[in-house]
Amino acid sequence: MKKLLTILLLCLVFSCAKKTEGEYLSETFLVTNYPSEYGEPIIPEDNLLTEERVALGRLLFNDPLLSIDTSRSCASCHKTEFAFADDVAISTGIENKLGLRNSPSLLNVAWQPNMFKDGGVPNLDRQAIVPIEDEFELGINMLELVERLQQHPEYPEMALVAYGRVLDAWVINRSLASYQRTLFSHDSPYDQYLAGNLDWSQELKTGEALFIAYCASCHAGVHLTTFGFANNGLYETYSDVGRARITNLPQDEGKFKIPSLRNLPLTAPYMHDGSLEDLESVLAHYSTGGKSHPNKSELVANIELSEEEQAQLLLFLEQLVDEKVVD
Amino acid sequence: MRLIEDIEIVEMKKLVVNFVAIIALLGMASCGDETAPSASLNFNLNVDGEDLIIGQTYNLGDPATLVDFEVAQFYISDVRLIDSDGVAFEVNGDFLISPGNTQISLGTIDAATYKTLEFGVGVDAVRNHEDPLELNESSVLSPQNPSMHWSWQNGYRFIRIDGKFDSDENNAIEESDEAFQLHIGNDAYFRTVQIPYDVEAFDGDQISLELKTDFAILVDYDVAANKVVHTSNPNEFFDGISSNIPAAFSR
Image (cartoon, rainbow over all chains, first blue to last red; front, side, top):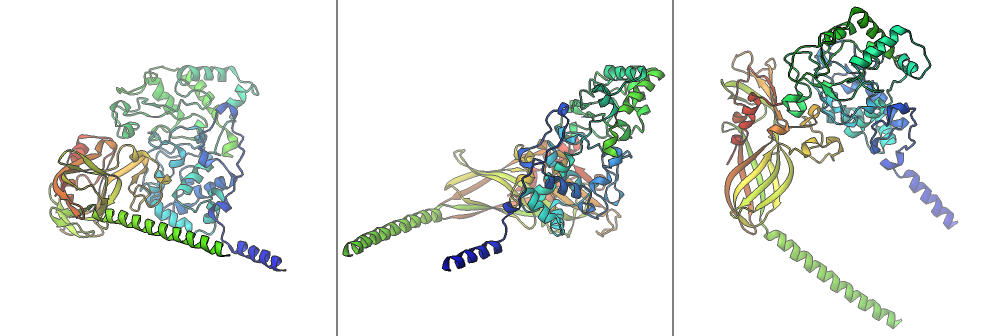
């Protein structure tokens, strides 16, 4: 009887004990069907994908609580229908303030070795704090945001389950990274063609050949980018110096990250500042070889594409859209 | 039974002896701490000699412009006291100085005759690029409010000054006046400051090292023409501003 009472008492003590942070943690790792040809995505050991992390990140990504005046969320400038980019040259943040650069597509960001068009931030796990605190984007201090989200009816417990720690700046940034690592695209008509599942007309094959001849040195491989930085001769003088803003090196002036061309027709307007409104303008730029600049890539040269060739190249570029992702 | 009591007495004696020894050791250690000199570094934040108070107005810049301050803070790092033999006593780390926090406790220092005080203004090139999100909230390099991390360049604002200037030129600062900002960051603008500082530190001394920081020397340009100054990639204008940093600190 005494033993029974002791056991009952112990049970009572344990059931009253508050759960520690670690006891909440879910460690069921998400199995993602990343395309094998893309290689290993960049996922750090301390932020492996779980359903709970992705779920929290998805909610935060779409939540206007992440802006100081609750008018904007990440999704305001990264819209599903535009391949998680935007359809304006420069998106507006809080109070309709103009940002700095054209909003990039987030698809396949899991493979990107550095963030932003100037590569200023080394990985996705440290990226979100930039637009969150930027006075022209979401404009909220990170500690203020943490305090705000800690009052939310669901986020604090979701943070404990996802990461085994209280909701803080680390959790906000890491969960947003987790969600974005689930945004991938690999099933365009071009992928189907390469896999032998589609027959292409001669016109499309010529378009592909033109692409390989003139574009694929920079927009290379399955990701259609080398992930490098290049000056493509857009301007003679750059008001936004691009990569040089980070490295302080004059030879990096006017260099920007080479974007993937996957889903390209959905991500107009183009260039770092969105100054070219459509693909025709982009082809016209490259046909003439762009403006003169000491840092301009040697690969950007006057290629004088005929009208027919431009049409064939455009037709090829239209095959890069993965409809399933933006549906 | 007697034997057990004897053993207990012996054990008890051992315990008492050990206890006394530990207390004596602790006493010696604490006496040692008491005799070593200790020091603090105290900043007087001012505008051309007048104490800097948030919300108060000052004339500064070239030409002189009426301004007030909403934020006025900076990082100090790796403080070194260099003695007459050139040997340095170092306190490594980062400290955030603001009107609400003007003191750095250096703890106990070596007894010596010091000649020079040296410190960094900003965060050194290694720590400047580490992940602030990985740091415990007690670290001044973890996210701050107002923010000191300049996240787009994956580094810190070394000096952050925010305020308003008399943009309507009515000789007063009002809500409608425009904002001015001077944010100095970027590894290129990390500055090491050396100040001759003769001080003798004897055992038992509590030394207060007093320094003045003059914000009028930092904001020594045409404020109205340069409302927002963020020293991203270097240029001549930014070079000029950052070259004033050492002169802004004096005894």
